[in-house]
Image (cartoon, rainbow, N blue to C red):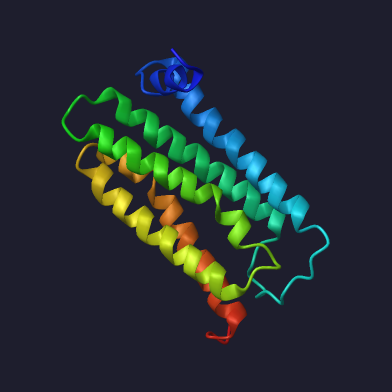
Length: 167
């Protein structure tokens, strides 16, 4: 069996090892992508941001926490054998991958409209994920809600930076 098939098999088990693997894989991927994005943006000129916007390093920490919750949400779906749970796991995996792109389309050098579109698209995917996952597990879908709140905050920050809100 190939390494990727063994990894997929290990991620889809309902045991302690799988829980640690789901969470740590999401967290490590988040640390790598956010670390790379922070490194790439280290000399970039930053646009004026609203007073309530978090610094980049704090946003990275929030995202790492959110990715840990998404990894836990994915693992919680492993305990179910009902029809459609594979689809729910796939949607959460897709959401994790989409969230890993966030630091790259929200870099200071990127146009704010791109960041707004990316945040809105991720928000739509997060809400769709909640709908799909909730049919299988209410507990697992509740772990996606903090992401929705964070994306709404991120959209508010971008809209304020664009000048659509006079905060």
